[in-house]
Image (cartoon, rainbow, N blue to C red; front, top):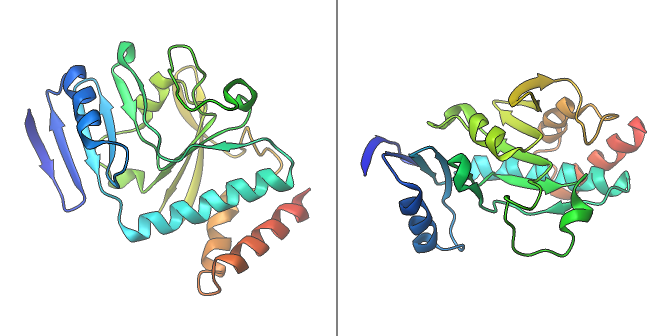
Length: 208
């Protein structure tokens, strides 16, 4: 086990076998703030900061409120661990959601990506500030859409031929101007969460 990077909120390890990765997950347990990403022997452990969590919560609110107004079935599974040993890939997104495949996993509490579909949408905050590139991991897990928030910008990436391509429209919310969400967040930052959600819901209704 070799440490190749170390910041206040991130640690990078190399030469980690899949068995070591699995054992580490078991030892860390589920009740923890740290999140992991594993890519063919390279492991990153990240401890999110308060600013990171703020934007995660606001964008997650936007996703859930938009789904409710548009009457879309949605299952939010937070920072669940998604992994496939045959792909050498494992990750805990900042948040993740089922939409198109929600009927296939409805009521499930235990998942196996060898038989179950992956989440339809993953959310990543401050992706460029992480050592390990998450896109190849998500691609091997087959997650069709990622939203990445970084420095005031919310970008949409769609999985096309096993590569993520930046897009202007979301597969899940094709009628909504998703990239405008950060503007709403900033406009209502000092007004509180309820005011933001009220404004977001009205923003959705105006577009439909």
